[in-house]
Length: 230
Image 1 (spheres, rainbow, N blue to C red):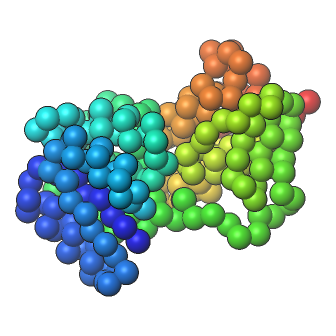
Image 2 (image 1 turned 45 degrees about the horizontal axis):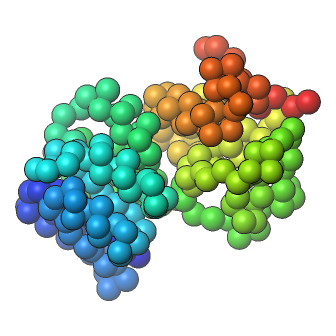
């Protein structure tokens, strides 16, 4: 397991590195970056399994770093911030971050967040219910973890794929917010409605002919979301 830790504060990098090494030991490799440009370069050359990224960097902020990394990598990104700002959280998620933790944080909270992120990107060995789900023009290949829309391949992050899988497996059925959050993010995320809203919006932008007037992923206001089945 290879980790990229990005923070301009050496003591934060040290604390995070020690926490990771305590959990993974010799199997955990930690790479550190102290600027945004260095982070993008290392993410490209080292291909880490998980990135822990601070928002406040001396050259390029973490939001821009996240956006640039998402152009070539689906590695899960856990963003760090010194303030508990709702808008910062939503912006980070919209740019492709997988989770968010506010400084100062304890090592137990950090490990819980990391485990939750890694759990979401694990690939099941034997997908249940068939290898492909086809609804309308959308084809979901569970073995290859690939998606096509009208014959065109569409790149999804692991979390986006898992959310779409839940919706398509239950096509025609309204899935409450809490159910989707628990199944995709984990039971500890049942109240994180912002996470779900952001990811639904991202799926619509990638899959729908007109994301403002969705044909596939529909909202049941105040309850949840459902995938329309012809």
